[in-house]
Image (cartoon, rainbow, N blue to C red; front, top):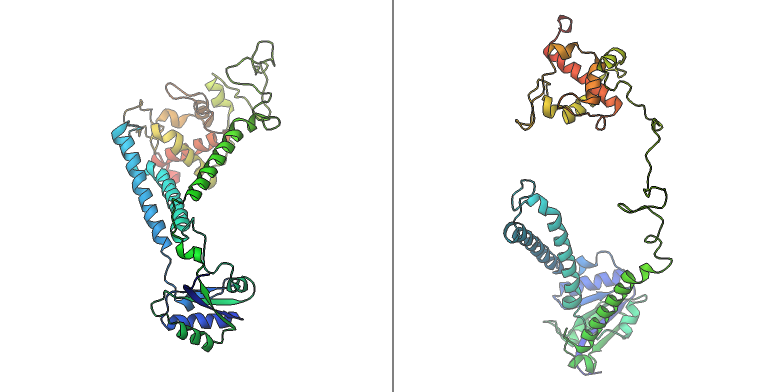
Length: 377
C-alpha cells in the first residue's frame, strides 16, 4: 500500500440515502466521483447529473466511416477498376449498393464500439483498480450503497470530504490508497504478456477452425450429410439399368389432381364444347384484371387495342376488339391462351385454369367498354 490517496469512500444503508448523497455531492460541484450499488437504482443518472456517454460519438463516427468506405470501395471497383455494364445500370448504381453499405456500416460501427470500449474506456490490458479487494467494494457488491470522491477532483479537500460524508450520515467512511504496483503501472496495449495472449488466442482459434472445417466434419457420424445415398446430376446412377436416376412416366399416365387439356389442336371443338365456369363478379374480375395486366397487356395493351407497350421490340398483336374476336366464344379464347397462336406462346404454365377464365371475363369487360350495347346505357 502506498501513501498516495486515491479517494474517500462512504457507505449507506438504503437506496434513498445514496440518491440523496449523490445529488448532494453533485450540487457541491464535485465532478470526479462515482456511485456503486448492488443493483441499478432508478434516478441515479439524474441525481449524479451525468452527461451523455461519449461512446455514442465513437459509434457515429465509425458508422459514417463505414458508409463512405463502402461506397468508395464499390464505386472504385464497379466504375474504375473493372467497369462492367450490368443490366443497363450505371457504373454507380446506388440502390444496388445500399445492402452492402448497410452491412459494412453496422459491422464497422459495432467492432469499433467494442474495441473503443475495451481498449480506450476500460484501458485494457490494464485491469487494476484501487477499489479492487477493498471492504468498500465487498459491501457495495452485497447489500450496501457506496459513493467515492477521487483525490484528483479539482475541489477535493480531504477534511471537507470527510465532513461532507459525516453530514450525509454515512455508516462507514474510509480512505482508499493506491497499491505500489498501481502507482508505477503505465497502461500499454503493447504489453508483451497481452500481445502473447492475443497471439495465443489467434493460434487456438485458427487451429480449432481448421480441424473443425477440414477434419471433424468428415468423421463419422458428422459426415452424414456428405456421405448419403443420392442421385448426383450428370453422374451415372445404379438405381436403373440404363444408368439414369429417374425414368420417364408410363405413356398415358396422368398426375393425380391434374386434368389434361382435351382439345389439343382442336380449336373448333374447344369453341363449341368449353364454357366459362367463373362468374364475372367483382372479385373474379379483379383477379382477371391483375393477371391480364401482368401477362397480356405488354403486347395487347391495357385496353386490349393491340397497342403494345414493348415499343417495337416484339410484333404487335391484333386488337381484341375486332369483330372476329368479339364473336369468338369464351372456349375459343381459352384455347388460344392454352396453346398459343402465331407468335403468341402458350400461357398454360403461367396461369391456372381459373385464372385463364377470369382473364377472359376481364377481356369481355374491355370489349363491352368500347362496344357498348344500347342496353348497357
